[in-house]
Every structure is written in structure tokens, then in C-alpha cells.
Image 1 (spheres, one colour):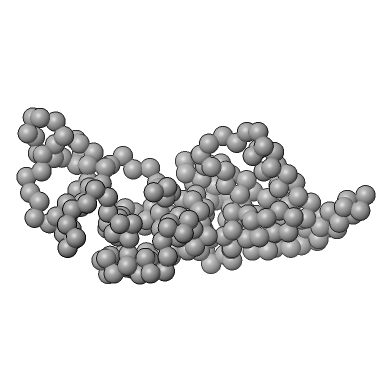
Image 2: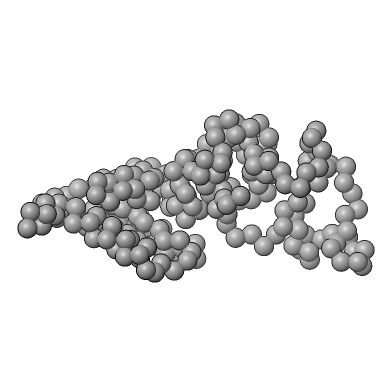
Length: 230
């Protein structure tokens, strides 16, 4: 369905609660084994009977029962941002989810379009640092995250940016800097594979006050205005 997901080596399959003696995919008759066959079986019976693919709210509810907190939030954030899950759908997810997992749903937000954005948003939320996903800035458009007043965090996708997309990203970065914003552009790999370094760096920038307007930032904004008149 195009929803952003964390890497998961397992195939997740829902079967009725009455299902038993499940066998592996080969013809040996060996019993299905999560570790050997890389299959995670979810047991839940639904009145509509078996279907090839579960409705999205049900699939997300099953994910909440199995996946880690961050992975589940990233998937639901993505579904909300893409318009695949509305308020009613989110309430259905809650109804289908165990009460012990309801607190996870309190952290989901519309606006984070990928798990990389959700990961940074959750870090900022845990430290009560003001931030706005998909903030709109004049002459630039929407940015992935605006932290405080002026720290802009942009996260590149998993693919390598080339051509017009690469040039547009650099134009946006230039315009942001000329307006006085502090721009931090991160790669997918940095956020997902080097998270400790990245999270420490973001918190260090906030501790340094780079997310607030200051004398240098105001001077930069003035320079941008001057350059527009040249």
C-alpha cells in the first residue's frame, strides 16, 4: 500500500484462532517455525472470513501487537500523512488493539511522511523540544521538520539524489541559510544506521541554542534581504 516501514525480515500472516498444525513452505511436512521459515503467525478470527489482504486498520492493529513502538508509530504516521488512514480509521485501529498498546497511538501524528522523520520527531517529543513537521517557509515551501524557531532538519530518502531533485534541494538549502535558518540535511543511512551519533548531534545543536533566533541569525536574514535588492 506504499506505507513506510522499518526493515523486517519476517513475513507476517494472520490466521483464524482455530488454525493449528501449520506446516512449513516445503514438502517435508515440517512444522512452521518462526526462526527457520521467517514467518510470524498472528492468530485472530474475523467475522468476514479469510481474505487475501486485511483492511489497513486491521493490519496496523496486528502490527501494534507485534512490532516495536517506533516501527508502529512510523507506519501509522505514514498512513495518516498519505491520507490512507483517517480519524475514523485510526479509531478502528484503537478498537482492534489491545488496551496495553493504546499509549503508542497517543504518539502518532499527521505530517511525518517517513519513518526517518518519525524517529527524529519522537526524539524531540521525548525531550519536550518544540517542533513542527512539514512546516511551511516562505520562498522555500514545506520542510521536513522545523525545530524551535530556526533549526530546519531535512532528511533525504533511501535513494541517491541526482539531477533536478539534487539541484532543487541545494536551492532550498541556500534560500533557508540566506533567510537565517540553520539547516541540517541528513541521509536515510545516517538516521537509520547511525542514530546514536545523529540524535546526540541534534540535541547538541539544541543545547547550543541553534534552534532560536539570535544576533547572527538576524544579521543573516538582513543579508538575504540586501541580496534580493542587488
